[in-house]
Image 1 (cartoon, rainbow, N blue to C red):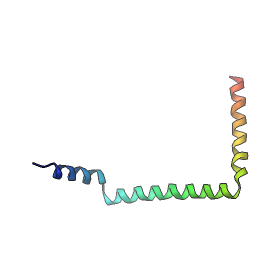
Image 2 (image 1 turned 135 degrees about the vertical axis):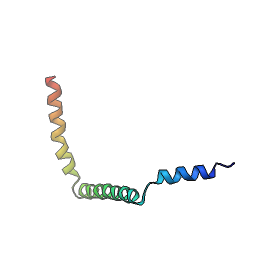
Image 3 (image 1 turned 60 degrees about the horizontal axis):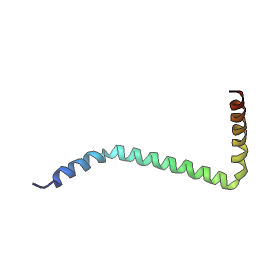
Image 4 (image 1 turned 45 degrees about the horizontal axis):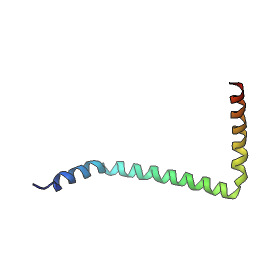
Length: 67
């Protein structure tokens, strides 16, 4: 006996339904789109990211000083 039919069943089960495949692809495309938007914004104004997160970093330092 060969293991080919058994392996083929596992692949089909792992693959999922067509709807699940499309949902996963949609999720990946949304993530890629969000990433590209952030990359574009960063390239247009690299200092905006640092200014936004600088405040958070300083506030975290103050919290640690009080602990």
